[in-house]
Length: 111
Image 1 (tube, rainbow, N blue to C red):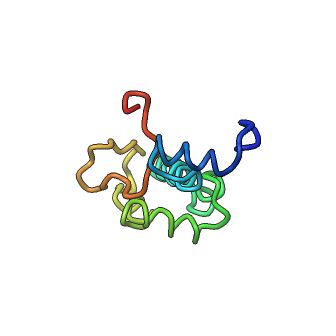
Image 2: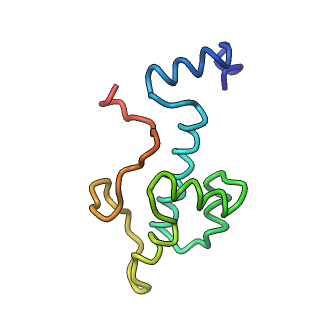
């Protein structure tokens, strides 16, 4: 990413730390986990396929990252839905799912 922007990797890390309070790796990981959460919540796609679509090398890595960010495994999100329910997106204010504990990318209004 730094090469594409024409800056050094260290400078990119400093910019991420200054503006997002996270490293580029943490931001990428958070985005992958959030994408996995949307896929799990909005579909019945198998967890292995979700992991690949979200950019993880394996379901095991996705499970670990998901649990680190949300404090629960992805299977807990899937179990939360009843089998007959139409998949729906969870709101950010859902009391049962805490906000991510690792840094995430802020939206424009937070900058």
